[in-house]
Image (cartoon, rainbow, N blue to C red):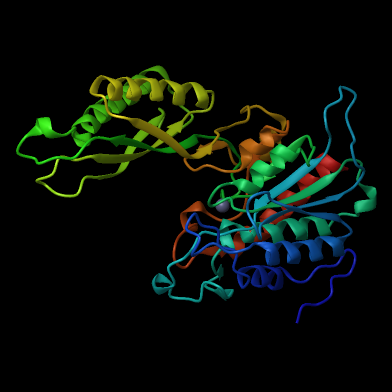
Length: 395
Ligand SMILES: [Zn+2]
């Protein structure tokens, strides 16, 4: 079924996207839905190998069945006279979110072309980016590159970002610039907020509700903790603003609480989950430390043990608005650079010294939705823009 890839030759766009869509690679914090991404990695490796890339499958520690793919062509380790790395990275994630099949009017794991759109899970977020990138790369004679081009395909972006964290920690990639091909309707995105999610747990003591002195009510203390968090939120918003964002201040959302068991028992246990979205430039560690000090002080005053457990920690992206890559993409796409409300793997590439911009085909409005699709009219412009970018950075 799969035509063998010849050097400089690729299966059709539709064939590649169809293959990727029908290869489930859901990542999820719930192990029941979580799947390996190895098959997707293997397909990409085959096609890139066929184009003449050197491919490396990089297993991701502590996540069995998950791997990144790092594929490189062109001269290695080229630096400019100042010692800065040369070349370009095209990066994307191989996983998708889970889907609720009953809400789909189509088959999520089969590509369907209709209404000038490709339907299927991951078409826009973001399996569609890979065939776009491959077609752009196929337009180049790799033997003529003067700087390296690297394709990075990661695991678990939708859950833990373990794949991109491992790319950063292993320092496996070097380049001047990086495109993270999440769906932006081909608008260059130079910044987004960071996110921390955590649970705050208080342990009280139960007793008969008729006499409050018989126990220690965790909900009563949580009420004070919540007031403190709301005060902290107001202070953060007073101190930090960035007019580049639709929501110009950091946010702190009280998202979920579980506590107690019965109205006539003193509540002995309360857990609150919050999400905190920080602007670029805000220090995660300092903000978390201050939050911990403030809520711990309340717990101490009441003699209630408190723990704060961080379960998501994704940094903000902050590339300078006038960076070379941003300016180039504004010119090439005809669209002014902007910011987005969602997080990406971009900051992990920034940490490796690359100018990083989020830029890809499709709209985030269709991501994580039933009947996800990639509009046909996004594809050709995206291939043209990426091919131009490779020329700009690697020829
Ligand atoms: Zn995505």
